[in-house]
Length: 180
Image (cartoon, rainbow, N blue to C red; front, side, top):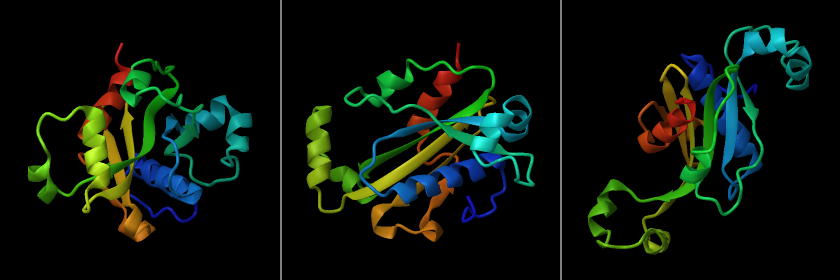
């Protein structure tokens, strides 16, 4: 993706590429799962797929290529779905992009105790300080992780926050898809 800024690591570049792709689809989208494959290995072992993905003529031979997977089943909790995944050895990592409502840390003290998950979600949705956020989280087999957060109200590439520890719970769930 031409608008993706150069980042320090291939994982960060992949996260930003997925964020840019998701941004192009607009908001109110379902969660999307991606396999991350070594670009050089993909070109060598799957030249037809590399050509289909537009990688045949690219000068860069290193890095990670995100390959979108089938749709995540609607109505199935994300944690249950992730628990069913087993990746083949050719997959170096995986990434997930998902939209959620978040509250600022200042609102945490206002959260009523003892709410069910459904009631808590409804309470957050009605809170005046809620913010819609798109989270893109990626992990590699070796444990490396990175993520990007984009607020709907600041929907611009220059406003994307990146870091390895922004969404630790989701990163752990993705890392578990590589455990045997």
